[in-house]
Image (tube, rainbow, N blue to C red; front, side, top):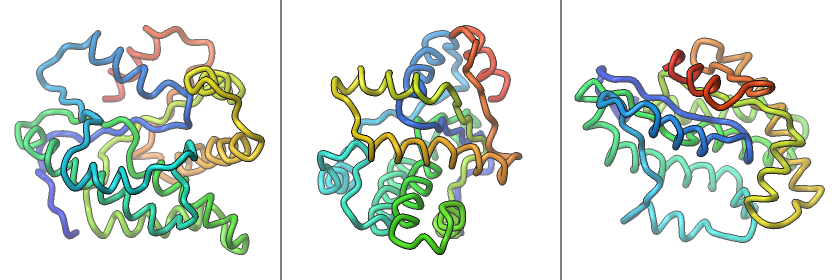
Length: 213
């Protein structure tokens, strides 16, 4: 590994498709469990991270610019810079560091785009190749909480949030991500734990998060 992280603490990421409720539950978790042992990485970018992000901005909801591998490396760069700036100190204090979205979204979304360019290699195989790069760099979550919910309900939420209808292509992309997340959970059962939100109220979901963490 190129980047060494403290052996103390615990690094946790929340994953899932757009509209599944990651950000919502991270905010609710912070409100309900005001525990000093938790540190939540905020999404306020500065310096190099902000400049990379601004260069990546476009009208696509998944920030696709046509260069999936290069774009994945840019997202990894932002992720790692923010981790070094914000998380290492908290881990050194033996805190639990929680992040909304992480390397799995980056790798999976890039893998879907790469598979569209080269269908001879599956989405999951592309995902594994991209994650291997991240593993060689370092900073792998100790735990990833994957949120699953009814797909159509997720689409309804994200369309209401963004105040627009998603195109068929965008919905198809999210459907591939929806299935892809379940597949990567199957190949990483020790790290990735699924919370199925169907038929659960918010308090039940929050308690399940707390138990996992």
